Length: 301
Image (cartoon, rainbow, N blue to C red; front, top):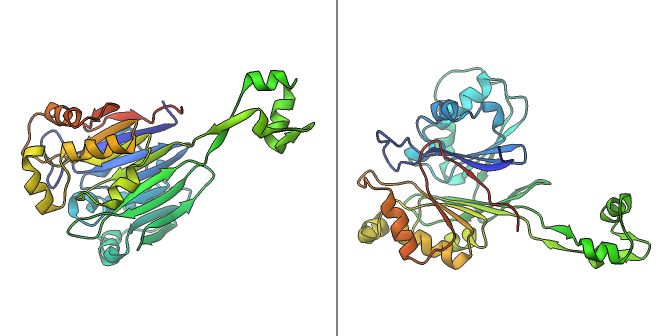
């Protein structure tokens, strides 16, 4: 199993269907788990996908429409029932604080886990860890909505030929990486920047600056494509994207792997989303999401 993978728990918009559960997504990232938009039924989908409450370190809610948040009550109670041994942090729009509190305390249960509330009120950095920086950008939807982006810190890739030319080998390579200089040789002389990986999660929104900022240079972009292009007016009226719009964003942003999700129940042929995305000029790896699918974050360049 990849140490960085995206687990799809549900892909329906507004209402579940026979084949699609309400939204729910888990990003595994170097031993941490970030749960996005747990809609109704997410707890059961976690069970089917082999995702445990112990896997969760953060919960990120884009907005408080039911298909993106009604599963919070069950997930939070499960975290406490299973006595998750580490703190869990919840990010969500600050304007929906009353919705979060209602869901957190929807019924009686015993609280056993430290659940930190970290509401989002503006664009910016939400958290920094050694493995990633978590950012948020405001989107355009009838209720306040934020998208999320993970950025791995840049690293360095050692260049074997440059190391050999300077006679550096074995344990000395580790010393150079640790100290930054060895016998007058700087690490910059024998390595190059390895850009950190980038992931973005973009749900219910019209086209806006936030969508483009989140998608920029992503290795993996998960983005809603509620409507097909022929229903563009409906998409705009309800604050959503079409398959072609989502793909054009990914094309212009240089996305490596595009995942389309959040599909309206009016459509029965998932392949049409792929056809319209390709027609929009996106040439990278493309996945039309299905429930319980797993998508590996592309390997580093």
